[in-house]
Length: 103
Image (cartoon, rainbow, N blue to C red; front, side, top):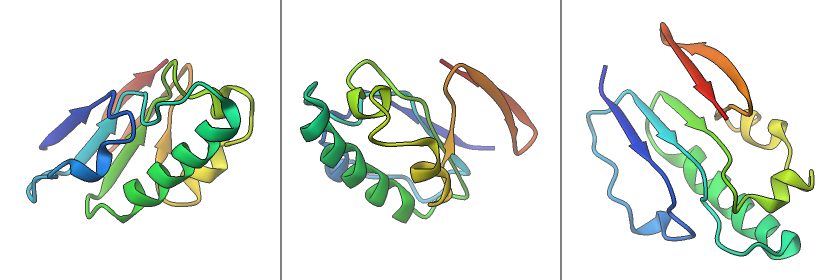
């Protein structure tokens, strides 16, 4: 299994070139930049839309310290999961036979 692990894209995710041959992508937090929850809400939702469109079978997101809209519950787990993104927050999941823990 080929896994791409990224983090701290801080609203520059559109500049990433995602390899064609990966099976899983894990984003380890800080997709957004602003700590203001209202601005952060828009940034995270923009990221979710982009992340959902990536042609990779398994996608995982683990929130980081810049994810204030998630912390304030403006963006919820289902906002990720409804778009096919596994969301880990102080928990483990088994995905494609791999046990992952995100916190």
